[in-house]
Image (cartoon, rainbow over all chains, first blue to last red; front, side):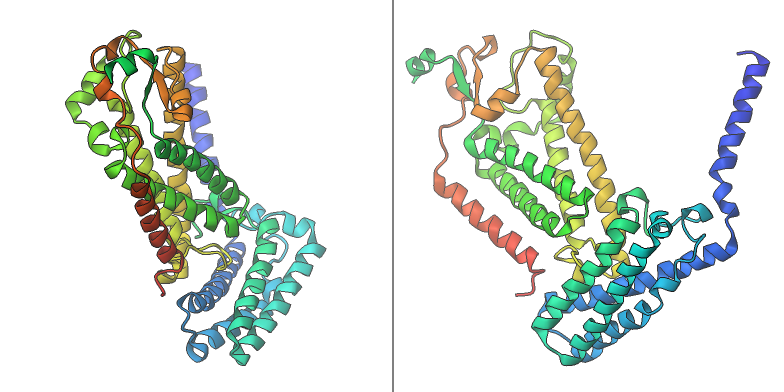
Length: 164
Length: 233
């Protein structure tokens, strides 16, 4: 290989490495925004799982598990739509499952978010009523409300190494 | 017996349960793949349980099934594997009756991977916390999410091993002129030069009694049911 050819390859390698580490330079505000959003959504997912686990165990601890977790979901869902300001998508350079479609189909995204808030409020009511059959139905409705949004506006699991 | 065999040109190589489990596993893994990719987790759970049942049945049949189904008859030591591998380039080698020494490794590896992927799936948690694996109540949300990612990555490895398996089948078909797919469908393979004088003993030992299969089916169903309710009786 000629010396100039070698130089071209060396420069190309440097550029490739540079691009690979480019995302390290992401805006700190976007990093914090996305991290906080992920933590809160993870709490909500964990809360629904905790309630679902009670149904699986068929020994439902209403006071210590179902009620506090239903409360967490309801409280957090109130702020759900504030967690996705424009610029907090993958264009921020931060690793996120949020798809650009969120900001392209704003109306649909907001509709789905509000439906999730409605289900979260219902779930909280059911938790207070301590009706096991109603809880089973409402956990499914809540999960489907989460899934409706995730199916359209969240990258599938397999596109990333992990959730972090 | 000898004369009866002399009249036929085919040898029975795979019994019905082996063939049925092979193709059911193909369908089962296909359904799991599609439902997993499209986030149809409700059906993914059913197909995953079906795959678990099939693998458990195959393991059981590998102990009590007909000769070619049994692990003791096809899992061989390193010497037999190397001997077989050294003849791989030759076109005139006799057909192996059942799994060949090298194929046996891929079968054991594939079965192990399928089982590992299923077990990871049992503990995996979906992002909605809704259609999680039946044993996910034993792990936290975060652990279950990590296992869901592993479940996916190990499935990818399984796909590569399946690709290798298919490559070997195509290699036998094109290079060695041996059709391995037909026997897996109808259970028979043609007699060839290597079989002279040993046909009677190499052929699978007739039909296994139905009750053996039924016992395994009942056991496998009981295990899958217990798993599916997370052992909360």
